[in-house]
Length: 115
Figure (cartoon, rainbow, N blue to C red):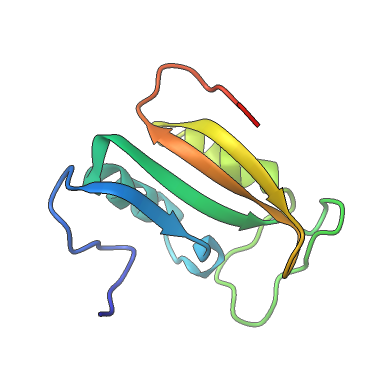
């Protein structure tokens, strides 16, 4: 199956979990986050693997295939939280590059990091 994460082919509030490691390949991150929010059930979670940015320790510079890039990983997690998500858990990783896997809840009342 193939698709476009700018326009998810799922019904409103029908999905328990959404995962991506490809936000750097998005043309319109706001649209993607609205789509994720739309398809997630009220208790659903959004899991994003986010590479460390160009100014983070062990971070990457953008490559030839990224549509967007960031200086700091934290700016991406903050942007996601601005779209009605809250952080539930953070898990750093180092392979194949440095970054974090962050679990976000939909419409949670408070940002709580349980890492």
